[in-house]
Length: 198
Image 1 (cartoon, rainbow, N blue to C red):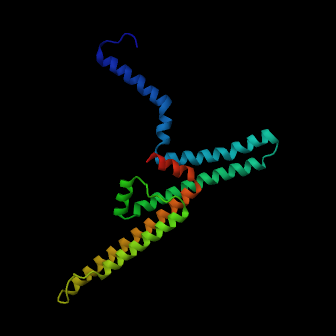
Image 2: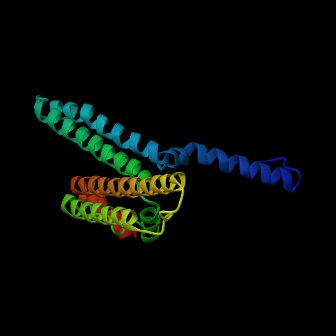
Image 3: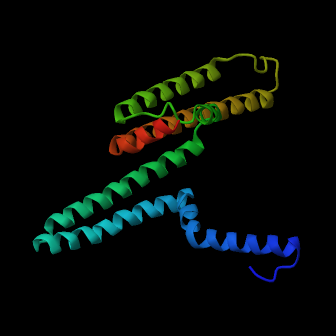
């Protein structure tokens, strides 16, 4: 950076060099950190093993059978984990707002460690959702007998919407717990790493 005149040109030169360095050495890590790209990266890494492991096996032993088995296993494992995570993310969008806020506050500490815990948590979510729906049905205080049929119908429709929302939210939460439990059963190392980070 020779022949620089003034602080503006100096800052511009430093910034240009810094951005060039980021683009050259760090952009790939940044992109891989974005959720959809992270999933594609992991599936791509599994697909790479599907090709490279048989080649390595052939070079070492002259046979590709074991390498194909290991490569296919690695690829299917990566795809399975990402499909389970995608399903959990989608059902998490449908989960009730209270559960979403609770999950954000606790940083995912109550995530099921395995499929058994996932099913146990799913059962609890479904039960609490059904209890909430039953309470919505039983709650009085709507328009009385002297109210018009239109008012009573609107009250009934409002309750039905609330019951449907409570039931759908509980079901989505149960599915999410089950999928996370299945994913954590398939990849306990990832689960333990997430626990350590908290």
